[in-house]
Amino acid sequence: MPLECAVLGKDVAITETTIPVISPYWRLKRNGHWTLLCRYDHERPRYCVLSPKAGAALALMDGRLTVRHLTMIAQYAFNLESQEKSQEFITRIISEANREDDAVVNMTPELEAYVKRIDPFDFVVKASRWKEQQRLATPISLNVMFSNDCQPNCAFCFAKGHCVPEGKLLSTERWKELLREAKGLGIDQVTLSGGDPLLRKDSLQLIEEMIALEMLFTLSTKCHITEKIADSLVAIGMTQPVNQYVREIQLSMDPDEPTADKLAGSPGYYNRAVRSIGNLLKRGFNLRVKSVVTALTAPYVYDWVEELQDMGLRQISIAAYNRSLTGNTDKMFLGTEGLNSILEQCRQARIDFPEIDLSTAGLEHGEQSWDRYSEPFGPLPGEDKGIAEKITLCREEGRYGAHSSMTITPDGKVMLYDTVPRDEMLFVGDVSKDSIAEVWNSDALRNFTHPRSEQFKGAACYDCKDLAKCQSKAGYCFREAYFKSGTVFVPPAECPMIQAEA
Ligand SMILES: C[S@@+](CC[C@H](N)C(=O)[O-])C[C@H]1O[C@@H](n2cnc3c(N)ncnc32)[C@H](O)[C@@H]1O
Ligand code: SF4
Ligand code: SF4
Image 1: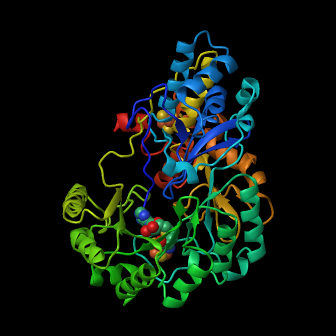
Image 2: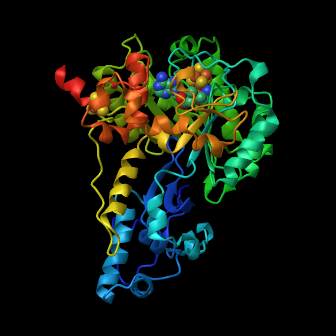
Image 3: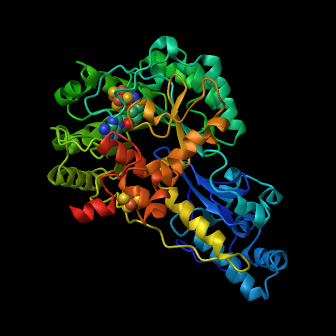
């Protein structure tokens, strides 16, 4: 059960007697000279960069001080001219932290056990040092592929084409070292990609290590979870909470038995998935079932949700088959009609099965617009425009995983996404020989996230007046460019100039 959190400035008003607290779902973190607000979300961990004053003020919000107390401290600490101005300052920091999020909430006795106590002095930083930093000093999360092997062979899967022979896999000990290094760098959010995380012989050992390090992750799998595997997962602590989080097992499954078996390329797969669900539910796992819906399975969504709800499942995710990666129009491609049909079935399912938490992704039209900038941030009193501008830019970059995460493939080669093929052109490092920190700070990696104009020589971007704006979105750019042209530093299909010409 999620904790009840009333978001300040949204669910409840901010008054003098309000006691603000950083939501247990969020963490204040130091990242080099920056302070970040981070939220764990297994689809895409979220974060925002705070200005030095916002970071210092939020560090005081640990559920013990009222807005009135915070106002008095801020007036003195930040040399603000009056108590009214100081209250305005505190209210603005809370409102901006909650602008697109739910990070600062009203303190209640129920939250007491989940609030992390921090030392506010750890979050005091000189503006000059803050300004020196140009990018995240360490990644926020890691995407790890323990193995590229799978039990099924899903027709729609973007991860196909990643094939590392067993003899080249990173050793158990190297994976453990990397996980410990990550934790030491402050990375506590990991995505387990694949292939399938359970297909490596020592996968339970690696998962146990992540649990021991108190890392947050979702175990997404399409393996058959037998009674024995389910028991082993309980034994290594998968059902134990970290603070308020119980790690999720996401069982991937497709609707409609004959179609699902065909899509998975594995007779009997659907019934094995049904048995896996039973084995997991029986042991009290935090279980979600996810389907990547294609045109072939779209007609069966409602019936499938009903079947799962009858089995006692309460969490379901539906993602649209991601065509943008290949731009293809194969028979799995979901046109407008397919998308609308899924949306309508989900709408009806939410009405008919209100106890089901049914989340969807990639179904709304135009979700990935090139022009979706957030409102720019204004400077706080006493902070200069440069700080606010950098924060606005970081928020834009934050939409692209490549700026905050990296993907470690089974032999240690590092890429910036798991949704691109295993192509040497896309390797940005190798953790079989280098550390995570070395790869993160290498020129090879930075050339992808913040490319230099010379890298575009011979392409339209080279002397384009919009290059700077595009560079802040390079994570997006290079992947789209790659899928369009098979190479990297060229305009992507969504380049506004190409679109205008078309
Ligand atoms: C690559 S899989 C790895 C984990 C595991 N093998 C599984 O299937 O859950 C990670 C996630 O990507 C999703 N996925 C695979 N191909 C996709 C596609 N073409 N579009 C959208 N999601 C996809 C899978 O459903 C799964 O939830
Ligand atoms: S969706 Fe998962 S199980 Fe299916 S082929 Fe892709 S990685 Fe393997
Ligand atoms: S992608 Fe298009 S808009 Fe962006 S820099 Fe290249 S040519 Fe210019």
